[in-house]
Length: 142
Image (tube, rainbow, N blue to C red; front, side, top):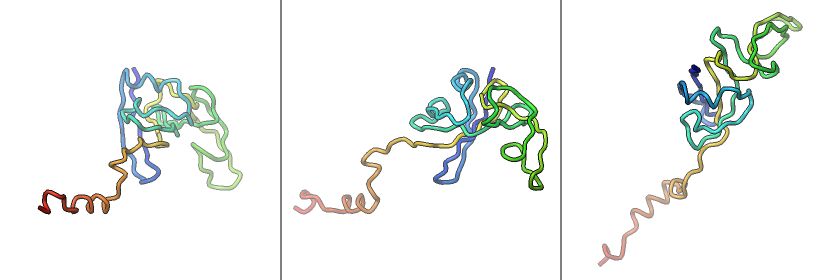
């Protein structure tokens, strides 16, 4: 059965966290493609919207968005995911994984696109809360 290590990154803070999903929790992710926006409940983060940005398979080969399907192929690359040329114009054949999540994928990268909405009480600045708490009530004044 599928087991994924999911790295969820927050672009606003620059921090990331690791979430592991197994068995029945991993099933909703199978068949999804890179670039899709999913509900965070599938990754134990309810209220969030997450975008699938990348991943790698059991042997460490990276997923590439322009290779269709869940296949592993050897492609000639000049730049991009899976190859950084040392010279301008250099090309090389590299093994890559397609853009569809399958059982062979082990690690997924996601980023937060939308956070849960905060309630009105949480949105108040701390200075306003301090003023409300320090204001004397009518009972205390008597």
